[in-house]
Image 1: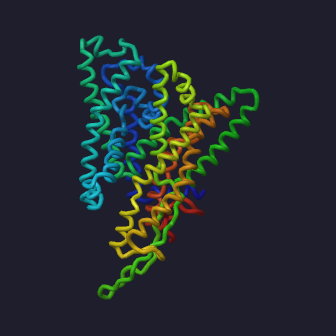
Image 2: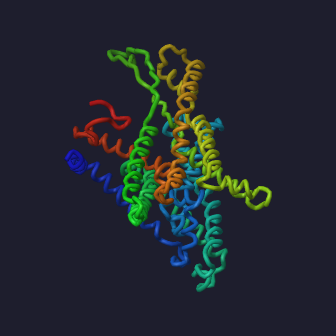
Image 3: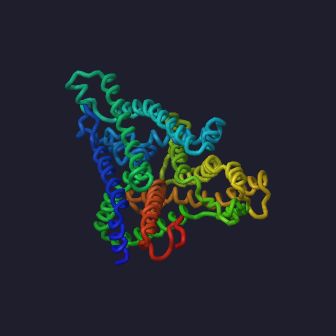
Length: 444
């Protein structure tokens, strides 16, 4: 009854109702576009491409694009070029003084960096689109290219037109994400990625249920145990995403005219997992390199060992890489020097710690300590799909036991629920949860 009442409250708020409707319409447009095959390709001959689109880094790209990558869709590249460009610009903000200066300029600097990100996205698409088309040519029969076969197009002409279509599709998806962010609910790019992941979930669950129900040796009991374990894994992922270390900050009291400013204690929430899913993505990309060693007889055994997705050495190396990349990406994204300068500029200080260099060292030491358990937990979540497969869970459903799929789902859903709850609380309605709080919700 509480849940039904909350849903009614959501639709009582006109602005929230319009934002939800706008978001759903744009997501529907995106999902329809994921099934529109590139002009000139016979959709009935894509079986090989679709079967290979669930392996390695290609599987990750196919997941982010909601299956469009394996369908040779006009949205095949999805938001990945934009994400790649965003990561590059973010890294430049750490290592290049000009970009670091833009980050400190506030809204004007953010607009300039967003414009640079869009330009870099186009450059990334120009590089990725021909590579994707070359992969399509290699995996499907030549007869599948109807434009080349029936219209007399050359491969160059087909690739040129398809590159322009892929570029337009990717930019359109990016535009959809920005419109959702501005006029809908949640972060548009993140929601588009999440929808692509969620689209695979019903099929995975249905396949797992069918497989277990046809098993005569306790299939139903195994299915129940799988769902119970999955439930606790989701709870653990939520705890990892929301866990923070609160650093107290005291602001000096100032009296201007008849008003008092500052004099209050606030907190800097340092996330246990500040890197998000990026360490897993980087580690997965790096784990594809051992496959290159299979070309030579002397290293073929090593390649087979490190290429075994459910093998010990693959998962051990994967676990270590996730920990290393967690520290690296946290060091890139969390800047204690900038945090200390912002506190000093606003008259804030950490009780018992001198402003300036001592504050930077203090924040850096805290981040180093809290990142260790966060990186270990993230490493376990990264290898959970392989452990699930070893224990008998099907490949498709096992991917939701951890890794990028689970973390993206949890992170995006929590962020969206937090925004919905803020609308409810502003209108004096009860929140989404009668007990407990979503991270970031303030007490009433």
